[in-house]
Image (cartoon, rainbow, N blue to C red; front, side, top):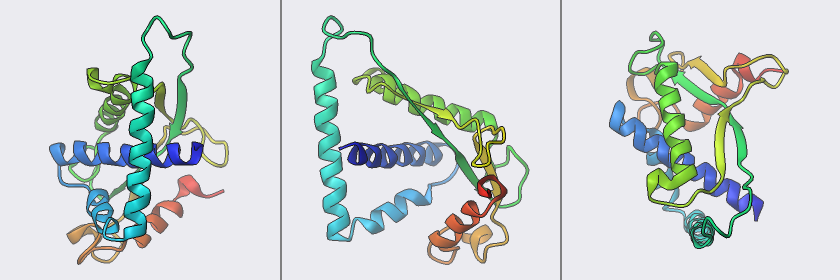
Length: 179
């Protein structure tokens, strides 16, 4: 059950990032790739089952009134934001500033803590990882120049651009993740 819950949170997290980036700069490739994966019946069935389980969990949380609750445990999930940019300076359109990323994190946390004012508090909070895999101090934001990947600067990820696997490999092989 924990694994399903984590996968659901992971998918929701990237859905929210996609919505935010569409409103701020340009559509996120995560949504495009997710839509392509939904064509696979096995993936679609798993995704729909996770969504259903998440809805049940949310309904259960909403059924609890404040008077029934005891002191809540808020689970903090450390995360690393990987920014695969095109070589531009921090704060440019394809290399968002720390402030922009912080705004996204604040929005995600607001949605998880109270549904943006219209839902249940699922008692989850995302925080930046404070340490990298080598136990060095970290801001939790990993910036990697993706301009060296064929097609990435011109077309991003997908058709005419870099492959999803190449972008992930670039991030995985960045200094942040080297041990």
